[in-house]
Length: 138
Ligand SMILES: Nc1nc2c(c(=O)[nH]1)N=C([C@H](O)[C@H](O)COP(=O)(O)OP(=O)(O)OP(=O)(O)O)CN2
Ligand SMILES: [Zn+2]
Image (cartoon, helix red, strand yellow):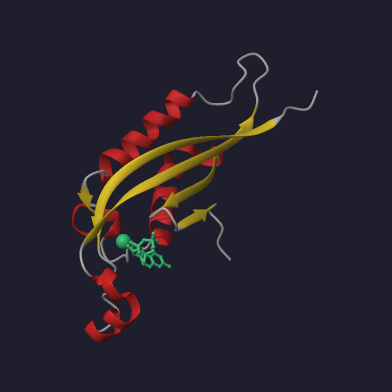
């Protein structure tokens, strides 16, 4: 019988500070591009990591949620929680810490551990802004 394919999502919240500033722009261009966000500030980022796999009929799952939680802790929470992203996290050296770039960096870090199981990374930077990345590149 065909296996059912399901998607499991784990949610975590981490606090981090950042500023939006591109080394490829002049001071004036940065101010015009990022406005108030060129100043150091912080967010409680909500991270939602989704994995997709075939349901194992014997176990009723395809990954243990506890294993997923541990992977996210090791790869993301321990790296980014209560950190200044541009200063403390080497993956953001020279990268503008927009939510879009956080999604890409976090996706690539998790993909090393989860491989094909990784389906989607979603980050809410504020109550009203969120970004989704599924590894697509065109
Ligand atoms: N395309 C993007 N634009 C902006 C990003 C981003 O990641 N991608 N981020 C910011 C800032 O980080 C800023 O902190 C968030 O902007 P803003 O929504 O204006 O923040 P508020 O504190 O006003 O909260 P809201 O609830 O979202 O109004 C800016 N732009
Ligand atoms: Zn911000």
